[in-house]
Length: 614
Image (tube, rainbow, N blue to C red; front, side, top):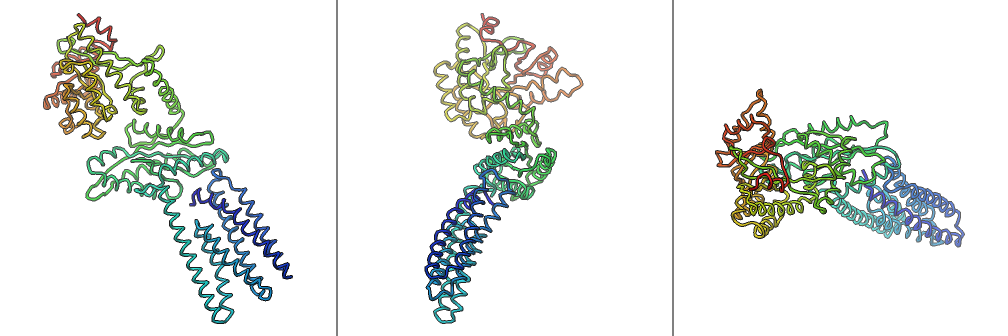
């Protein structure tokens, strides 16, 4: 399959080769007329004119980025014949006038054969299928001509001509290989040998132009390997690279030549189908293809002494003439893929109208979020924390965003803030507001020992985060107040560079601030991680607490979490407590602190001061 850049190259050479043929050809006709041997040259020049007109038609028939593969293949086949024809005409001229010794025109046709071969080897060097046959067409007849002179110098000239042919072939072939190598490196991923992201986006943009004209459709599969980072972290990047190579081979062997395949970056791969007519396309076919590919990717991998099992999440997006932006299209396929991840991974999601609506809401929320932050419409509410005697001992600072007369859930806008990077600025602002509130409450006489603030993993990965906290502490918090502060992190920190995370947490702990693990038991936690992370507290996720009101369900999870906490000398907070039955069960099991609607919802700092102040 030839690439768009090569087609453009052949297109650019047509005019130049026509000019380099017509002008010298006209000069030769004039010389033939002057020597009164014009007959054959007129017939030859007429053929040259017809061939040149055909070449011009081919040039104007070419539409960069719009023609589909079938049209491009047909066009390339015709252009190849055109180049063969126009250089063969010079061999025809040589045959017609090689015997014109008296008029000396045989010297000119010998020279034109040699010159034409140099032109072909230089201008058509990007394609061996073109320049090799043309060099043979031009120079082999010349060697035969010298050979049949039947003299010693004729044999020598014949041999020299063959030597010249060999040199041209070698030089052209070497240049061809160098050009191909440079093209390959510019367009391919060095690890897997698949196309790289930059070339793929260029190809996709051209495909969308073609679809706009042809009204055909295509589809794209965006593939992300599940938990691939775990392989890199546990077995090393060498093993991870070999897994990526093995995955690339499986995808390539499965897709064959029906798809353009690229490594999009990291452990993401993308497959783009060729154009199809609307009546030949079926989303069921795309889904069935994705299912087969997913099954193949899940088969075991034998890497060195390891037997590895991985799965993948696949998003499918149909491309039609209505799609106008490659960035928009990639984002939609990406959303479909992440939808598959959110639904448990190891799955396939087709981007549809429902997802399109979610994308629209996502974009609108993303735009509003910037203005909300700038206008300080994002604020903190505080949910009180109680001990087993139902006394207020602390609070958790919870972010709230009021958009006009409705509140937007943090579950909606926090992931958006994390993806856009705005969470870093929002997080710093909220930290400062929380510290100010703690100071204000202390001054108003609110006696609390526990002040929890949620921290995003994106904040922990900021290079100067620990230094920023130190500055805020020096500005607002004395040592006594710092000892009240708990930074709550979720189990998602365990999916990041754990050693880097631990280093940052240790620096912050030296300031007197402690750490609590939120939503414990819902994600990545394990006993080894609990031992590794410098945490002081765990929070039982409300999903476990909610089960306690249902008598027919297994209630072993909460006691197990409490046992683990005691083993590691950690305090425990149960969140989402809504009934007396839940509260009584948790007290019986030895839980330390409680929060939830059974006690109170999250309220503003002024309401908190009014209810729990002096």
